[in-house]
Length: 190
Length: 190
DNA sequence: CAGGTTATGGACTGATCAGTCCATAACGAG
DNA sequence: CTCGTTATGGACTGATCAGTCCATAACCTG
Image 1 (cartoon, each protein chain N blue to C red):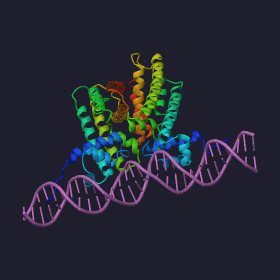
Image 2 (cartoon, protein in one colour):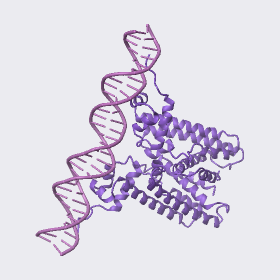
Image 3 (tube, chains in turn blue, red, purple, cyan):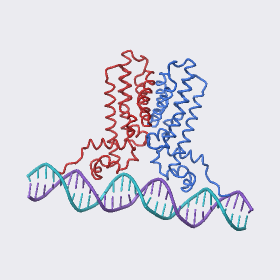
Image 4 (cartoon, protein in one colour):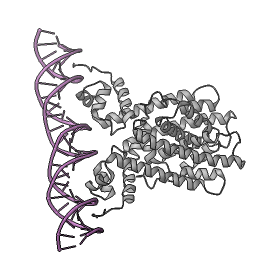
């Protein structure tokens, strides 16, 4: 056969996610990526195509991981309100770790609606997050925690919007306590 | 004396705000700025120093204008809830106008806490917005609209976070109706 | 009208960008 | 051990970047 890769593809993408999350797409140079991923230039192009395709793969994987974290939080057994609060706050990146950022929010802010493939990834991810929130809201209504008149899907969209705001606040330096208090206050409406 | 400028400085900055809001700081080239502002290269450097100082001036002016818009909405005579909802939604950029963006959120996402001067501008702007929200919340408590136990300052921070989320949603393509519904739902907690 | 001053536009610069080329290295199959 | 195949690293390319230089144009004061 042939010479095998010297790097682990999953680890390399995880590193690329960090680089893109820190700098954004445009401002992350291929040299940043090579250094951050610990691979050679030709390996990057051979394994991932080009910077854009690497970014799309990183965005897809980031969204998958983020949804998994939130789903796990939402699956918690306690009251719906507490599970939703936990899902809102999971993986935000504390003030200890100022280098992290959200690839989803970052790509929306950077590209707006200008890139069809980014749109498709973000739209799909948003639909899944909204659905996950909506399902837990529905549970809460059934359990008598929330008002019966509440529209679960609309509540889900509000919670996604709120989470975007929390991510911006976290990236802007807000501490864990401020974020939690903001989440709690907004959740009082459910 | 000397030859006078052929362009209006305020209009040029307003144009620069549009260019930076659309592309972000890094991705806005000096050629984009020159074209968007309708001035020559040397005029840009002569009048504004360099790209970075132009950006800082644009960010300052954008924040001033944004605060003015929100203050005007908050000063509306009706119920506090309606004024706050209006302030949350003002100037978000509808789906008709997909080119606009928020320089404040954009700079937080792009720079995180990495640029001290950007930090200072954004921190000052955030404090003013939070204070404006908090004052109107206080009014609402006094008028019996909101729960007396509500902490106005914490509510103000939540509203700023919510507004950031709404801006991300707007940039991601959300329509005016979705944005309003999300704002209303989150406001039910006050 | 003349002279000092500032604005303007176009050519230019060194640096950096994403992406390619190519010689070489490392592997499995025979 | 040898050969075909794939991975790797370093040099390289044309394009674009932010910012500068300079000759010229336009204005106000005297």
